[in-house]
Amino acid sequence: MRLLESLFHRNRAWAERMRAEDPRFFERLSDQQAPQYLWIGCSDSRVPANQIVDLRPGDVFVHRNVANQVIHADLNCLSVLQFGVEVLQVRHVIVCGHYGCGGVQAAFDDHRHGLVDNWLGHVHDIAERYGELLDGLPQDHDPVDTLCELNVIGQVLNVCNSTVVQDAWARGQSLSVHGWIYALEDGLLADLDVTLDADSDLLAARIAAVEACRRRAG
Ligand code: CO
Image (cartoon, helix red, strand yellow):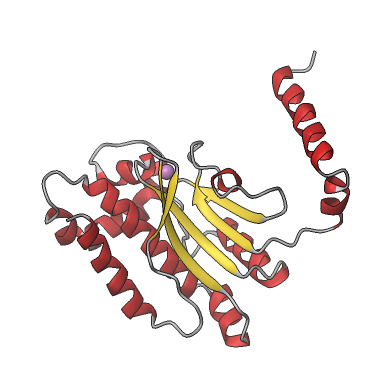
């Protein structure tokens, strides 16, 4: 007996619906993928890349991990970035965080959560780096929300500083890197205004984006 029968049932129904809408959809997609976007997001089940921007299969190349991080030595993420930028020639890399991120929360509190604390150490570093900003937020503002934003900004800069993106920009390839955040409460995305391309001053952009985080918190 096939396990998880209901998922196979849902799959068949979905494939039928897609074919009804567009009879050649799968045939076309099986030939090649040509997405314009690379999405780097959190593994959280409530933040599915394609669905929240209402894109179909083939439209977005996706990498997700706990707390949407881009670590300079993470071969998994860097391989996705390289394939997306160099082979698929995506035009946009989107780092998308979300408010209420359990990973960011875990990096912020002082409890032990197991192995994942080592992965989240990078977010913890961001919390330490911006400790003064986080400590100075209004009482009624959740500092974890601001840390979620600061984390996105930090990861956007990590994408920009990767050899993959630096080399793409040096070649003159058209490529923008964006930092977004998603609200679980209303399903809406917000742009953190840290959109960077080959002409951007990365340091100035980071300073401005961090200042905007402080202002948003009130
Ligand atoms: Co998360």
